[in-house]
Length: 281
Ligand code: OAD
Image 1 (cartoon, rainbow, N blue to C red):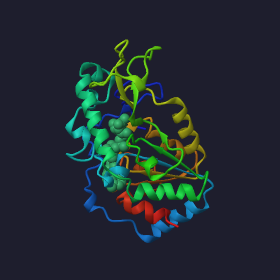
Image 2: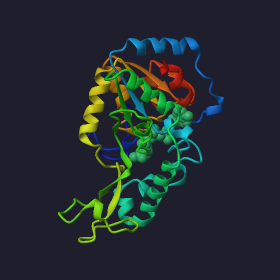
Image 3: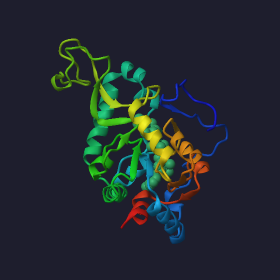
């Protein structure tokens, strides 16, 4: 892992590795320029997966790109090309402008509700259901598309967009079912604000979810790293943990990522094409 956390962390805090000077953008290769992997490369990985007692999958925003959900740091349509993450994805940003931040998450909720899981989500779900107990799916995504595709037991490292939680520690009067509507909604008794149930920069990942994810990558024989830039820790660190523990690590991404150096192989292409080819029947 390269040095330089933007925020202090205790191993679980959500932080972004700042770009190094003169570093090319990890996503600078346009998807259209990438060639799909050859049959030989796919076949070898299929064999490894077929013989593995346990596989783990780490997904990021790219797995939902073909459903129409924007990524965070890909191109000019990505979220962090349009917004400052400290404004829209930090507790300080929410406290400073609660209405603006709430409206942005409300917009994202509507956008996600209007799209469907793609062939990549479905391929993962089908494989897991056909091979009970052999896949652990860990996602950085908050969009719920893996769950809607039917994937069981998804480990959501960064929370869930559609869930609400309280900004301040909830008091006896705070009942999410009885919130006063507003932007954001609030507790009618004490005025506690409702916030989206996602993990923001500088916040801890849910401990039990992280521990389960870490245990899964430590015991898996194959780790698929799908559609993530690998820029956000501690999630990105799971690939290196898996590699150190002896797993075969395969990155699936149309563009170079910051985790390519942790991988034994990089399959260049969109996940909605590669995952079905890799995991079907
Ligand atoms: P990024 O936006 O950083 O990276 C998206 C990755 O998806 C890039 O590497 C793209 O090359 C790749 N990609 C694009 N289209 C793809 C496709 N069709 N198939 C496969 N890959 C494709 O998103 P994340 O790595 O997920 O946090 O970002 C990590 C975290 O940073 C997010 O969870 C988010 C953000 O701040 C929260 O919202 C809490």
